Length: 260
Image (cartoon, rainbow, N blue to C red; front, side, top):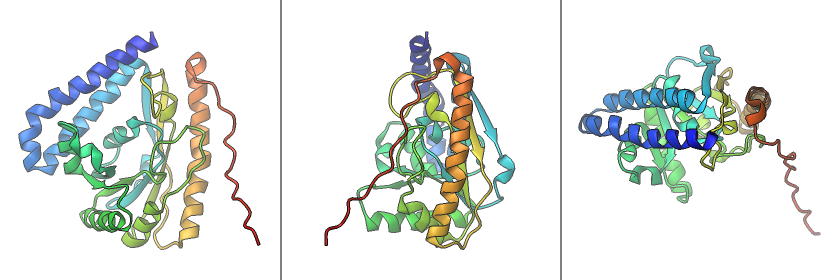
């Protein structure tokens, strides 16, 4: 049954992209505002379809923690759904996304209108371009959505921060808002199945600008790790018999000792 429901959702995922995206495309090319409205409408259809077809309920918590105006949204990343649902609770998001997504038909056009595309193999040049674009988005009052771990992680993985979020925080001097979630329990980073359950996105209290690198890193980890663990435990309980087996604890990386 889970396979069939997942298949139906996958069909709807791509069909809805064409049904909504293609008619609006000429107007989206001319207006970012039209692009944003179309994407937000499409995101609502995905949330509804996940509930109706797959039994996945979506909840947003802590929205009072979103500051007005520009901010950095530092979000955990477990699933593709993490790139869709934030359009439902963030006013004017500007996504940091990999440039390969711009090549996708229909989706790529909309992504280019609302995202900041980066070449993950570009090194220092990529960082400079990202910061320049993020600063422009912040100046326009947008909320810059970044996945500080860089790529999707297992639900029980501790937060491992990449340098991009720290550089952006230092350069833009705006609040950084952590967001915890448990999406990987229902929609894994890889794989086809969509398991029934209760997905939660929880906005945590913002971190004020002006902290040093080590202090910011510590504050982010102290916010994201326990909140994510709590949501994952809650999600597993809600899933019951549909929950995936709990994997063994992830051992911390041990650095080899340096010789004399």
